[in-house]
Length: 354
Ligand code: 5AD
Ligand code: FES
Image (tube, rainbow, N blue to C red):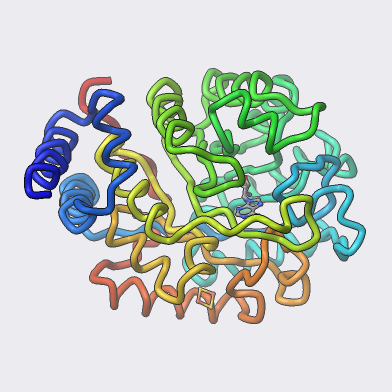
């Protein structure tokens, strides 16, 4: 037992110093809870080295829950006839930005299902309106898979960041989580297109999704090393009863925290959110995420009356609070965890050797 612990500690130390580990030892770290305390301490130290105690704010605007896709895990999938669909008008989106700006937000994240109503020209006109009113803000889009020319058009209109989780880097696992009309190849194509265009790119995956193995998680880490994203979003998979995966258990807080800490040591410079999903599986989930190496929080700016409808998974937090309440709540939580919120745009720090 002691020698196993030793090996775990030595591996964490090597990961900390070298920023990488061989497959076998990385897998051992994913597998074992024995080193968690040491791992979280190392991850927190690494984050403080690069980012100090700063936590970045991103204001999330969930502007449509219509989706043409049918991912088996997701509550807003096309075939969920129980979902109450909504779209925010351009005015409502601009109201969210105005409100957010007054509350100190300098990054707006426009997130939605893959909704054909929002043609490229509609997206471009929303992005340019935000860009011209808020030239000092970052505009992040999270609209799913698009053609390269669409990504280029949004970029030219003024968007500078894009979030698209790869969900799983294993092709067979991808096949199990998604219907035939989606492919990991296209997902990866999107991510590399976005990078080439010049976006700051965020990828990521769910922890504990149905049929996921630890070997899949290792593939996720290796894929991220290949992509070198600026942002990495992970959260526990959470069951939704109106999906084909209704019978599967949710992912665990513990494994998500372990992965967060491993990510911080592999990617010292990345922006890594303590996600809403993490906060939804444990009352202190986001605080624990910060202590394990996360450095971003993404409170919701959407109008309260639509929040409950952006129902990706069950028991989602923050569906009754308005933007000012979420802002104040996170301020308190972040401070209690030992960090402080900064309202700057908060670009990823650049690695010294690239
Ligand atoms: N549980 C947790 N996360 C989910 N997402 C979608 N459905 C679920 C779920 N049931 C995540 C996906 C997606 C992001 C917007 O939300 O990773 O990329
Ligand atoms: Fe929304 Fe706490 S962050 S209520």
